[in-house]
Amino acid sequence: VNTIIVPICYLMYQSRRDPAQIGLVHICTFVLLKLSGERSFGVALNKPFTTKLPCDLPLFSGGHADLVAITLHKLVVNGAYKLVPLYSCFLTIICNISPYWRSMSLVAAVKLVNLFELFSSPKFLYS
Image (cartoon, rainbow, N blue to C red; front, top):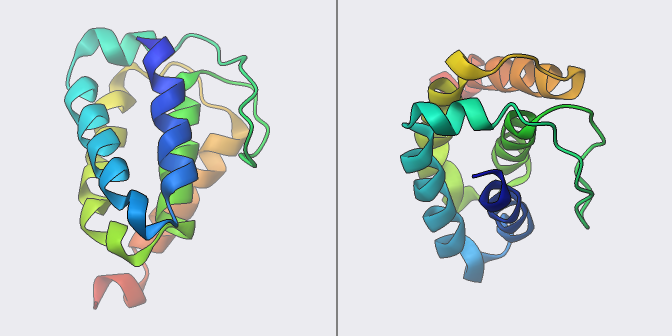
């Protein structure tokens, strides 16, 4: 399972600002959403992430769940405006994997708090 998560997160991250690749981000999001509904997937995300991706994701030491959270944060903060309809899917993915997430890296924790602040801001709530 973890062998498919890394390419999915990489494709989502690399395609987040390209209007021609928005469909790819949608497909990857729905694949993650489907997978996140399975208990075995959530448990498998605890495996340590040791791969170095050729992109500017922040360095962290943690599991694949941390990679998913950091990627989804980047999609919300730095993504195209056309990704706004996927925000509820992003939050559902995080909610689905959260019961099985054993340890969280500092980077992922900060990113999740940042998402909470963003989604609870009046600017977002009143839009």
